[in-house]
Amino acid sequence: MCSLLFLLLGAMVHPFHATSGEMQWNAETGCVEVALRIDVLDERWLKEQAKRRSGQANAPAKWELSCLKQHLLFDPKPKTPSKEKPGAFESRPLRWVGQKEEGAYVWWFFEVVCEDGIPPRKLRTSLLFKRDRAFQHRFVLLSEAEDESKKAFDLSEQKPEATFSLL
Image (tube, rainbow, N blue to C red):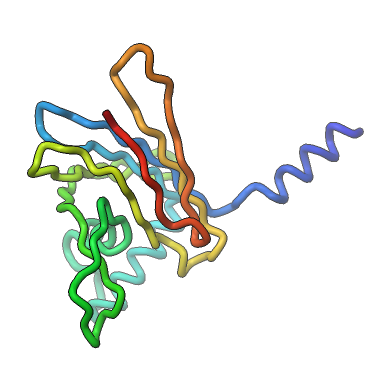
């Protein structure tokens, strides 16, 4: 009886809206390879937002990449302030690779282009916080070194930025 109570309590505090991602440095290509798992309902909501922003009946081509560029900023640097977008940030370039549906989820695959040959050390996100302020993002850092254990970090509206190392 007691274990059932803990199970129910745990389910109530577990965030309903969450993404999970994996990042790995590829020294050969000079890119960070990222796989991001999103609930299909959250993807549908993002697509609807892209459609609204475009003012068209359908979402624009490559809307997923535009969404990532707007909401996932690797090594963010403040842009020159403007009246239209105060507090805007620049990010390292992103390159769309593709997506794969898997049951109730969809995986988005993309790369962070590192023209200087150095992987990013910081990630800032606002992805899906307008859908649900309690949204959680978990990123696992993958390493090929045998002695490296998996490292992970969580991001939320309260903690939208993390510093990490992929080397």
